[in-house]
Length: 577
Image (cartoon, rainbow, N blue to C red; front, top):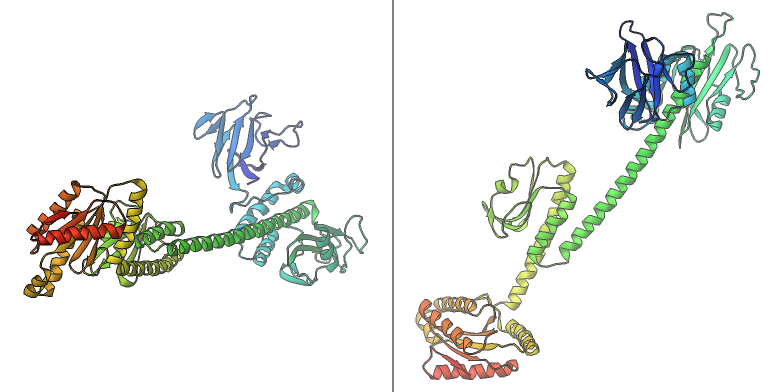
């Protein structure tokens, strides 16, 4: 904002004047012969001091400061104040005058640069007319949908304030120089002068041509083709990119009288001022549109980059939990939310895969009401295999956000399915199908790595071989289903006992474990396992172990001999190599 309009109204006589306040400090006081050019004078109130107060537009506020020589106080909100600020629509009083900021120069937020020379001319002749034109123009500048609608609206405003024009014409000039009348007021039916229009566009300045009875050139102005009976013509250009525009006014003799109607200094100033304001508004509109286009393109690029980053994050890991976590983190950068959850749904139960914005534990069962927590914005999207995305925000989600969230959810569901499939394939390759512990091949791979670490760090380690006693007879007597159940029970106990070491199924009814312990702790560990299996399952086990660090095959061979010895001793016992 570069200018503010302050109405000064006498409280008794209701006389008015208008003060145009800019961004530099200006003095306000009663009118005197010694007034400086930049002083804002109030001629109808003799009670004001010659230098009464100062006004300055600071941002969106109007600063008021009482001068030292002021004889009367300044009253703001019922109190005498020395220094204060007011907003648009507020006012204050002093002496016999009420001062009120009646309107912002540009309600739409884009400042309009006004020509100080034209303002000075208009203010000297008739301040109310120039002000009325600018105020009437504000809604047109604020609400126009197209350049043509702005030019037509401007012409309507000029029709109210240009007093000596027989015709007012809004002209569009394309890049080929072709003229098109967009709108007109008046009934002279005289076409606009192409010469004057062209010269106004070429110079970029308003041009006025005056004559009396014949078209004689006037120094410094254009010489258009004239039509008999016309006494003056004014063309004010509004330059554009593809099309330009000209506000054109002509005057003619009235009722056949010899008296010629000329626009006068005020009409020319108002016409030129309006053209300048409209031209400035169009330029700012174009600049803002370009800035919006650039911002939109930047936003599209940022969105594309964020989508690519999210896609990369989802496909660069095959851990289902990490996929779910990364998706919720990436989603928050694209669709703002307060609470979010990826859930595995089974009928009415929802188990958390990942969550953000509230306290919970992965794997915990929650209700959708717990996720939403009464927030206004809510979106849930279901995917295949019972997966569900639920997000909530304090504000309702708009349609683009909903569409984007659903599209991203589909990608996340696919990534989760792929990660789960990979996990399942890994499990099939590394885990025993009956017990869920390491299979023989994977145990051997992990054991070799563990033994290499123990050798490099000189750590203690023991290898255990565990075999279920008389398992064939148990199967024959109780059936294979009972045998499978017994193997699962034994595996569960052994896995608990030998944690955090390595444990796996070595084959059939035989298991193997590698633990970071040394005798006699290894003896106690094996004995604990044997006793638990004897008391908690329908079978017993024999255990052989070796606590001498060596090559894996050597350690297995020695543990196997110890196991053989345990069986020779009657089974259901522990023997060390």
